[in-house]
Image (tube, rainbow, N blue to C red; front, side, top):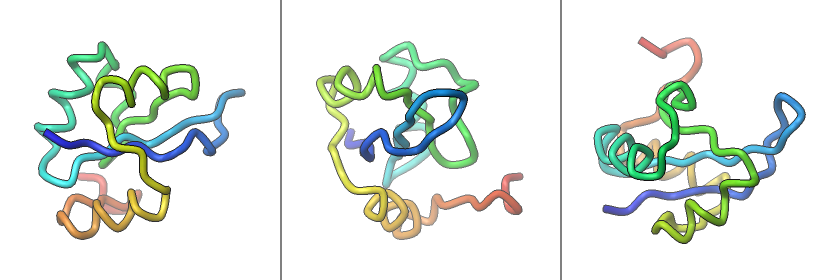
Length: 88
């Protein structure tokens, strides 16, 4: 199981956030997130939003650090990218 995380550089709700993705399936991503106790409500379309204070924990658990650009490339390559207007 390989999942990927970008640096916590996305602002929101007074915090900085990372995106956690899989390049295989949403099931793989949900399994990894469940193992870490990441709530399902943190899943948004095609990724989990991870607050900056959890970043190191997620990396220690096995997530591979990549750039934000690489996150998008991985999602597109796997056919898992869901845009806001295509979230169904």
